[in-house]
Length: 255
Image (cartoon, rainbow, N blue to C red; front, side):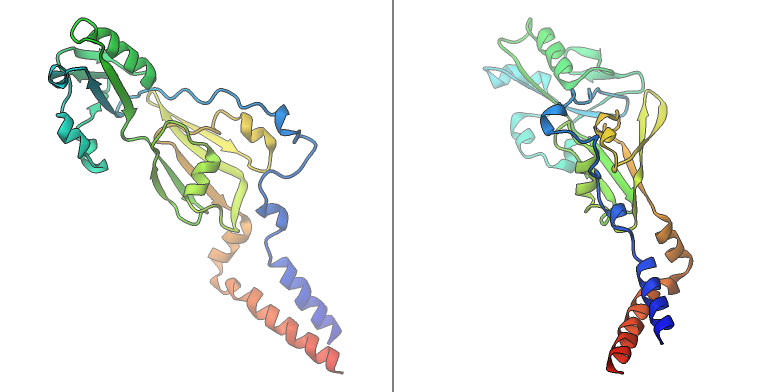
């Protein structure tokens, strides 16, 4: 009975995911006090082909600003997320947008602040004290793989980290491989692949720590999950072994 009990308990522990696999940022000497980890300048988000920009021009007299807006002020106040894209400016394959009155202008490679300043400068000869707002409409990221709620998520601002993206997706599952999180990124017609190890403090220095628009994050499973998928019966083995272990322990103590 004792050998059987030992084997059952051993199997029970072997079927569990190690604690170290479930913890992000393992405590090592590499982790210094917070003051020694200054936040680097966040990634410079720039407009790319196929981006959709929301651009709104304001002036002291709303009527004078109307020709420079696709929609009127009243219509703009009632925009929802779906039809906002239809009222935005699509960046064409050459990196240009067609702006009312001012015509075609190059925006690819520019931040929203740079686009705002450029349009404001061009409007100086047309409007008195123009105010321009620029933001991305279709800034989204996608999280797939071993997370609790894989999906695509819209980002209201221009700053999101890999940690925030995982949080939006409901956090890792117990079978997530935190040492090999992939970020798939497209820029200037090229596709890049970045790998992040969330057990390492060096993740904060990675160029993929801050995500860009349309990034795809993929969390691969650890080998324990792969084995479970190949053999569905193994999902029940830890439960069965736990029951048998408890029963064997009760019998052994009763003697």
